Structure formats: structure tokens, C-alpha cells
Length: 137
Length: 378
Ligand SMILES: [Zn+2]
Image (cartoon, each protein chain N blue to C red):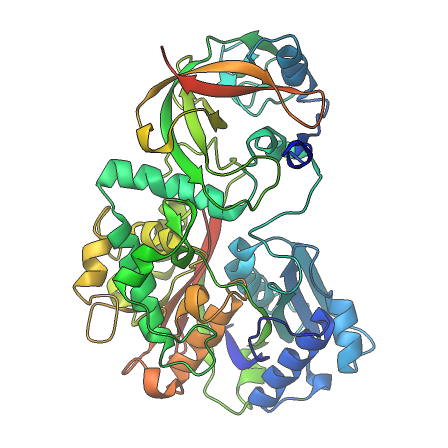
């Protein structure tokens, strides 16, 4: 089990994304935001894709809504033991601002439209911390 | 100037070829040339797509006996570029860069690298780095995620997805070359094991080892080939850099923009098509693109299939060869092989009566395209 978890794919940060991972490393979920037009964007970019303005990682609430989800039943990607839920979540900060992450919930209890809350947890197999969702309290 | 498909070739479709992708590509290319009644010396262009899993044009052409090519291109990409490559081969001919182009795909898609899985451990770069922590890294997850949203928005059911899988299997049963020819009932579909809910095993393409080649030539060359040419009427494409997660509407695919582009540029409509080769890496790809290309309204695909409108005697015959789901996954190039057979009238027991026009789509999700072929010179 622990050997299997150690095989979890790890992100490979680059200059555009390093600040995102650094923020998570401090326990904060931050999203790339334009400092000129205030657009949130994920994945992060070096400059805003709408106005080419400077960007920075800004903390978000972590609250969101399930846009869609799958229940992984077959272990095609190593690292997590099926079954588990992966959800596309729209963060409340902006319409269409999507994040994909594991959702800790009973598969049969998950529905599109459910309200969820992100938490920052260690990713097995390395030093990264990542967002995962739970049903909103 | 017009261009046409004048030759088609393929290897056997198997679960374990025991051969190199170069050897299979060479066989498929030789078969396409023989089909056209042309010699190796008549080919001066070659193009393929691959994801680090195949032989490049230089290697394949050398093994074919050519010392060099006037024009060649190999792109690292998936099934989303197939129609673009046909259009590119045609454009290169029209630009005078070459006269005859072999377009091929060769892969040991089952015994070698399987696109639906991945090996570990890995460090994941680029946009997929955000998907690594949840292991959301392979197509049967991405398409399932989108399918669930469609179910939520339009009330789509497993039975609707199953209707596509069952119809295509029924078609494949009349195709000697198909790898999956056993009957499939809706009950069997529903009892299939889960891959990623809402996808069961029968929602997913059947990965195989195979190569397919099609030969595109100028009109001048096409005049003296063995069969009636199958003419390229036009193409439409839409390639987005959006991630699967950032895409704004999971109930619609690239086809929401590629389809109007295609219909506007060709002046044709869905009702003008006699046969449709819909890219079907998954059942849901067929569903969303059938809607986007305008064969029916959003959320109507399940009924469309149940009412027999996607088969012989209906509105349009969709994937008469069984598609990637049942004939086998040659990354969409086998759709073009089938289109040529149908428009020549050489499809045997599965011939679509009086087929004169074919839509062939490529890709799914944020990126893809389509071409229209005709038995009549445009
Ligand atoms: Zn901006």
C-alpha cells in the first residue's frame, strides 16, 4: 500500500507555476490572478491572457461547486487505490474557474452541483502539498 | 485543383503484432500503392502522426526503397490531427511541394504503449502537472468527466451511451477485419466492468496493433489510378489549447466551432452526408460530436440510435465498420480507409447503398476536425 502510494505522479513545476506550488507548500490554496484586470486563471501564466498584465498568486476561499466528477474504478494511473472520486470544481471566485482534484466522499453520495471545500494536504511520494476537496460543512 | 484519395492499405489488426511499427507502416504503404496501381517511385511525400510510438517518414520511406522524399512531416499528436493531415497533404500537393502523399499511422497500441494507461513513477510537466496529484492523466478519465456533465445537463443515461456501443458492435459483426465481432447486447453493455464511472469497458475504444495508410494525390495523378478517386471536398478544424479542466462547457467539444466552419466552407449540411465516420475513442465522443455536427439536437443521441436513425435505412449510417470501439483503434485513420471503401462502393455486405458523400471526424474534447469526401469531383 505505501509502496503503491509512493508511485503517485508528481508535478514538475516550471517558472510559470512555481509560485502556485510554493503557496500550497505554505498551506495556502492560491490561484494566478491578473493585477491589472483582476482575471483569475488556472493553469497560471507568466502574463494575463486577457490583457497581458502582470500576475500574482492570490489566496482563494477554496469553496466551490462540483461541475462534474468521475469514480475511478480501474487503477490505470498508479498512486491511489480505486475506487476514488476526481472532481472538476468551479471555484466561487469566478465563473468558469475550474480546478480538478480528488474529492473525499462516498462515490454514490456525490452529485453535480454539490458544494465542496478545498483543503491542502501532503501528496504521497514526494514533498508537494496539493488541494483536495471535501463536501462543504 | 482538386485532390483525391486513390489508394488504401492496412495490416491485419491484432492484439500482439510482434513487429516493429516501421515494418507495419511499410506493409500498409505498399498495400495502398498496390491498391492505387502505383509504384514506390511515384510517391514523393509522406506524413504521419505519432506520440513517440511510431516510425518516422524518413525511416518508413527508406525501408520502402526510397532514398529521399520531396516533402515529409511527422507531428507529435493524437487523433485530433488526422483530418488536418489529410488537408495538409492536399494543400502541399496544391502548393506544388509534391504530387503524391502517403498518410499513415502505425502503432503497437495494445502490445506496446497503451494510451489509456501510464507507467510510474513519473514527474508530470506542463499543464498536466495540475492533474498529476489526482492521477487525472489518461483519456478514459477526461472523456468520462465530460460525459458525466452531459448526463447532468441533458439527462443522458448509460442506456444512451450503450446504444452507441451496441449499434457499432452490430456493424462490426459484418466486418471481417474488425477485432471485436462478438454480439453485444445492451444488458451485456450494462454489466460491463467499470473503468471510470460513468464509463464501462464497452465505452472505451479497443486498443490494437496495426497500421493504416491512405494515398492522397493530385488530380493529374488520380486520372490514371486503378479505382475511382475519392475526392476531398473540404475540411474544418478547431484546435484549442484549453486544458480538459479549463474548458468552459463539457457538454460540447471542439466540434461546436469546427462543424460550422466545415459546413460553411463546403456549403454542405449534415443531411447531405450518406455515411459518417465519427471519431469514437469513447462512446461519449460520438454523442457530443453527433450533436455538434448537427445530426440531432443536444440530448437526443440516445433516441437517435434507438430509433435506428444511425444505421442502414435511417438518417445516416454511422461507423459501418464498427469504428474504433469495435473494428479497432488505429487512432482514427481507419475511418478514412472505410470512407474510401464506402464511396467506391466496395464495402461488400456492409455497403451503404448509393453512398456518394462521407463525413470523417477526428479527435474529441478541446481539439479535432473533420473532412468531407465525395465520390464526385467537387
Ligand atoms: Zn488581465
